Image (spheres, rainbow, N blue to C red):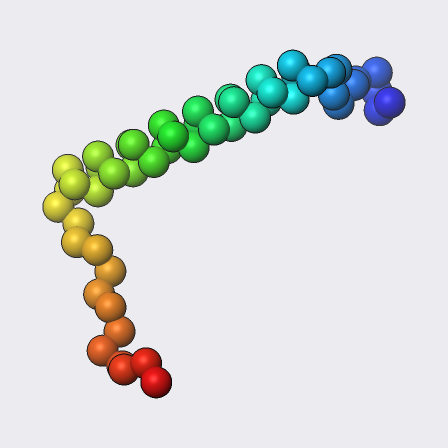
Length: 52
Protein backbone atom coordinates (compact mmCIF):
# COMPACT_ATOMS: atom_id res chain seq x y z
CA UNK A 1 0.00 0.00 0.00
CA UNK A 2 1.16 3.46 -0.84
CA UNK A 3 0.04 6.21 1.56
CA UNK A 4 -2.84 4.05 2.79
CA UNK A 5 -4.57 3.67 -0.56
CA UNK A 6 -5.88 0.47 -2.10
CA UNK A 7 -5.93 0.02 -5.85
CA UNK A 8 -8.62 -2.62 -6.25
CA UNK A 9 -11.27 -3.42 -3.69
CA UNK A 10 -12.97 -6.23 -5.54
CA UNK A 11 -14.71 -7.33 -8.69
CA UNK A 12 -17.45 -4.70 -8.55
CA UNK A 13 -14.91 -1.91 -8.07
CA UNK A 14 -13.14 -3.00 -11.26
CA UNK A 15 -16.44 -3.30 -13.13
CA UNK A 16 -17.44 0.22 -12.03
CA UNK A 17 -14.09 1.60 -13.18
CA UNK A 18 -14.42 -0.07 -16.58
CA UNK A 19 -18.01 1.07 -17.06
CA UNK A 20 -17.09 4.65 -16.12
CA UNK A 21 -14.27 4.54 -18.68
CA UNK A 22 -16.56 3.22 -21.41
CA UNK A 23 -19.15 5.86 -20.60
CA UNK A 24 -16.48 8.55 -20.83
CA UNK A 25 -15.32 7.27 -24.22
CA UNK A 26 -18.90 7.22 -25.47
CA UNK A 27 -19.54 10.80 -24.34
CA UNK A 28 -16.27 11.95 -25.93
CA UNK A 29 -17.14 10.32 -29.26
CA UNK A 30 -20.63 11.82 -29.33
CA UNK A 31 -19.31 15.31 -28.55
CA UNK A 32 -16.54 14.97 -31.12
CA UNK A 33 -19.02 13.88 -33.80
CA UNK A 34 -21.42 16.74 -33.02
CA UNK A 35 -18.72 19.41 -32.88
CA UNK A 36 -17.18 18.18 -36.11
CA UNK A 37 -20.52 18.53 -37.91
CA UNK A 38 -21.33 21.84 -36.20
CA UNK A 39 -18.19 23.52 -37.56
CA UNK A 40 -18.58 21.91 -40.96
CA UNK A 41 -15.27 20.10 -40.95
CA UNK A 42 -14.59 17.65 -43.71
CA UNK A 43 -12.86 14.29 -43.25
CA UNK A 44 -9.13 14.24 -43.91
CA UNK A 45 -8.19 13.93 -47.58
CA UNK A 46 -7.02 10.52 -48.66
CA UNK A 47 -3.66 10.02 -50.22
CA UNK A 48 -3.63 10.08 -54.00
CA UNK A 49 -0.76 7.59 -54.12
CA UNK A 50 -1.81 4.14 -55.30
CA UNK A 51 -1.18 1.14 -53.11
CA UNK A 52 0.75 -1.65 -54.73
